[in-house]
Image (cartoon, rainbow, N blue to C red; front, side, top):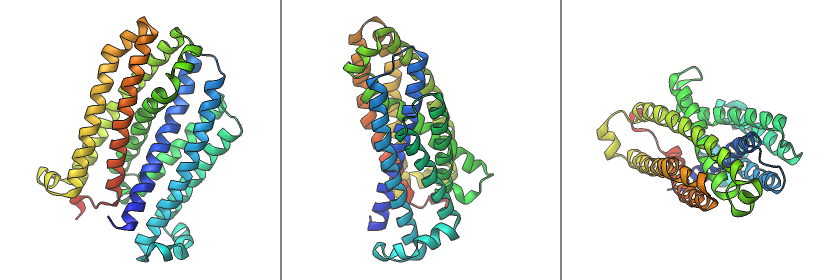
Length: 299
């Protein structure tokens, strides 16, 4: 990959992972409140990690816009910054990127001001919805227009991936850690896990439906799926997603009943979620690599 493609893929990975964490964090706070878990150190830890994620997302936005400027202007990266403002103000891609930056700045401000209540979560979720819509528009789906089924499918797909991956990231890394799980209490943890499981099932269903539609639209045929770099990366992504779904299914039908019986069961669920986190990060990396690839059906 050339430097511009590497920057595109790297910035997309930062954005995908940061968005997922922030979406998962908003949902986790809601599930914890609904399950009766006490506020305290867990909320403070979430706020710190949310700020870090928002900062990484802003960095990813700027890097992605820099790479896009290089592509559109035909200039090398070292000179592309001279055309950055023209791209931001004069193209739909640039204006969408600016909206994404504003949305993520709002998330950072809410977290910085300590908005961990329902009002803060509503503002954060609204900003994340705008961010997801702009990210979908800035990809290949945006070429079909805002009112197209292709764009709608991509926006839903991006948001659903963020919800699923984010719930896995935040739960495995933070909520189910020994310190926080014990502080929340076994009953509250189990109510949290039940809510997380239901949400993950809905997100996976949305991912499957929109993913199949988008893949058909972008690839066009089985031959192009197996004979192009785009198709190979897409197949790798699908394989990782299927593996993550299998782990999620194990947790739902084996792990969660065990978690309901003891804290040892909760620890087992957390271990599976941590493995699932690594796999989903691989899937996000594959998705990020597709950003710089031209879909076969459009060639």
